Image (cartoon, rainbow, N blue to C red):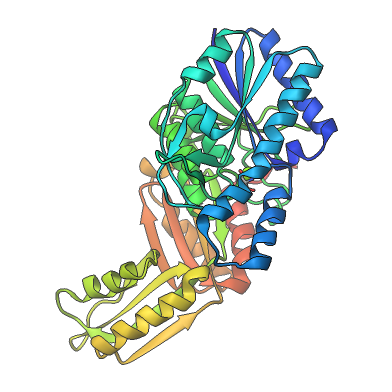
Length: 406
Ligand code: ASP
Ligand code: MG
């Protein structure tokens, strides 16, 4: 029998009525002839509540104990979900990550899945029952409880779907699909019926928060289609899958914006081999990851270099930048927090040119200055003044036909 994984996010687990509703949905897919495995998040707000209790004691306290605490939210959810299934006559067994054999590395609060031993899950499925697995958490070889970063229940679900060779992983969330642009900015943004793994990964990197990025990485690697949909309605969602014919006919699939980065600049650094290496080694040594990088053409043996980092790392990034600035005798350093990254994404760019020119012209016509540009095969990102973010997204959505007609 084909297997489907259902994942219920915090809002779908928010109260007993919604949990019962999920149970009925699961029963429906069983009636259709599927074996169903379920992964769940903590009830909405619960992880925040638990972590704020930890913060009251010590925001920089032990990662081991933070994980022990935060993982409790999902343990409540699995038991309630299994009880709800029992109530409507569907056999079900709840599993912590330990019981489900979800092994991770030992980086507390940001662990990564190493392997899943699916034998217990399969035994339950073969018994005609529904395994309900705690999302977000894992277990190390040394039997320590870990968590895998905020939003990681998506990743648990995709990884379980991969391990079980599932036909599909349905992710029930608080939005009814993936939109071509954030509907809070573009109210009539089109809902996408399909998007490729690569586009979804670029959208996630560009600020779309629909899924935890690593869930898409898993799904892509193991070729499991993911469907994003809502548990509040019977609407079809958005299918995230391999590129299929016709996808390239659409030039731009989506537009995203991201205000979480800041820009740092080193002015007047020597234009010679090894300088970029020194700058980014310094940042890397302090655990700071850099997103966009722009270096100006050298002039008078000097060049300027700008890069963006996450605002949460800004304090450390400034320190590292000032350190290299001294070593390299830079003329000056600059920090700009009031920036935003706006990106257009689409596999259609692989076969048709002209998107960059249209994007830059559209921004120019609104008087929006571009500070930085970076491109990949299927994405163009620009950094602009934060105040123009919404205007840029709205105008580009119109230019590339990403709004519903009428
Ligand atoms: N409960 C965890 C969080 O709030 C994991 C998840 O919801 O995916 O981040
Ligand atoms: Mg989530």
